[in-house]
Amino acid sequence: MKFYIIALAKKLAGHEANPFPEEYRPMQETIEQYKQRIMGYLGDQKPLKVQAATASKIERLVKNAPRAKLKMRPAPGKWSVAEILAHLADTEIVCGYRMRNILGAPGTPISAFDQDKWAEAQNYAKRDPQMSLRVYRTVREVNLSLLKSLKPEQWKQFGIHSERGEESIERIAQMFAGHDINHLRQIDAILAPKKK
Image (cartoon, rainbow, N blue to C red; front, top):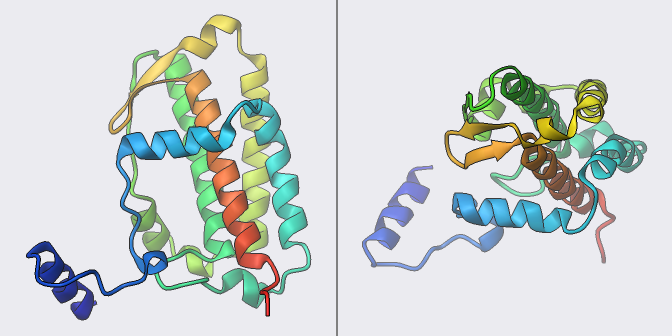
């Protein structure tokens, strides 16, 4: 860590190029770039259809993976499949809470959270991946049931996200579908057989 801080200080001072390969560097992305990337994954797909299929897709990907492989990080600073599953379970709980707050009090503030601090504080690396997947699937089913029950005007109700600004229920559904695709791709890439 000390080396990283010194290298970063030198880079910021213009003395040295970044010594770390791209895949080991923290993600450098603005809020706008993040939104565009996540929405780009969704494209023209229907958000509820994507969300309804995600848990089964994950189950197929992890079904025969050894537990050790699920817990192995693909690179320093990158999450393992087990950590991604814990993150998905937590963010699904967050999503449900945000939507219910918006529906109960349109215009309500929506707090952001630091996913890396959550991962560390809750020890995602030690979580049981199958338990995380069960939590994710169960809460996702409840959230989809809520979304399917909404009246057309309720999809436009919004909260004010502390980083991203105004977010409607419709936008949250889209963002979470894109978020699913993002993490499905990560899981697939981690578990894919290595080419020799």
